[in-house]
Image (cartoon, rainbow, N blue to C red; front, side, top):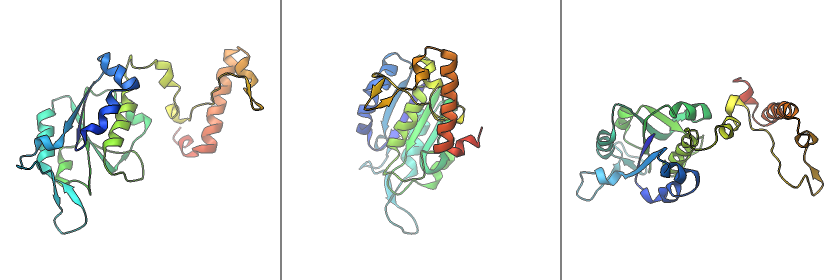
Length: 222
């Protein structure tokens, strides 16, 4: 998979692509990530990319020209263009799985007070990571990139993400490690039994119980 990210702040991604699982996925050539400065595509002598919106209002708005030119430069027949915006669909694990089927993602990070409405005409999917507002789309772009990359074959063990929260619309089951007792709190006996059928049954029951208590809305989707 190839991911091209358009941003006004490329250095924000330095740590993201140089640490942990993402770094290893890049080194193993399981994913290619390219960070592009939107200003590099500006035709303005001063590399201006934003302006005041028509009709008044506070803040600056991203202009269409740099975004249009950047997408045109990067896009191929295999590309899916994604815009990070609070107005997009709410992101979830199912969407992450669906996006792993794409060969090339172009992610546009919005900023300031928004973007020229005409930019939407070149976008295939608008995504929001929740009902709150951030200063820009950089953190959401990292979040969805991370969630997709970890699902790619060879990045992590398949069993690890099959048992993740939100698979089958259930939260993850409780997990424990050594010691078997800590400050009076004991690991459930079933996990120490070595009986894998009973362990699997307990885990599924705990998933349903935890989801019912914390995210009953997920059970409605099952």
